Amino acid sequence: MYAIDTLEFAKKLRTAGLAQDQAEAIAEAHGQAFREAAEHTLATKQDLSRHPTKEEVKQLLDNALEPYATKHDLAEVRSELKQDMKSLELRMTTRLGAMMVATTGILLAAIRFL
Image (tube, rainbow, N blue to C red; front, side, top):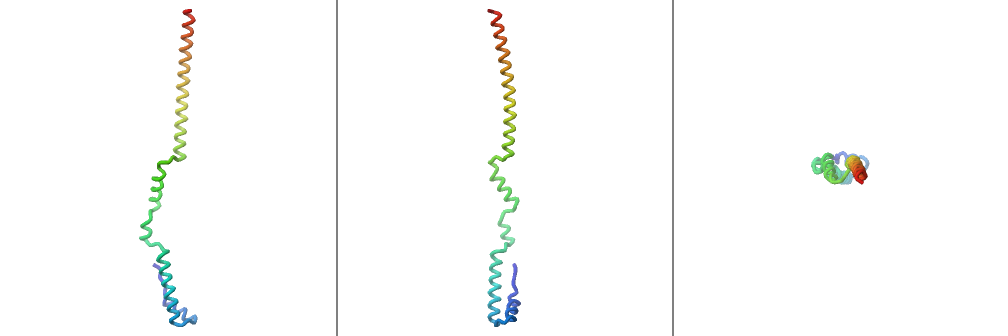
């Protein structure tokens, strides 16, 4: 805790020409105001221990944002969809080719028997 030397302050006021009782009253009032201001504005170790650390805040944010997709997640899904579409395209091409071969075979057989 910071402190102010009110006795030294009062001596300086007396040297400046104020009466002793005035100097002491001003010094005491100034000291009291300083102590109250310091009490309400300076953080103590106890104050700091009540607040989460940087790591705790990061963990809280990560937990809060976990259910939401990130750009990386969307990129992964997009990549998977592209792979699935290529696989589907290959299977459809293979099936269409097989159907064309089967249809051609059926037509040739039908023409032979006619």
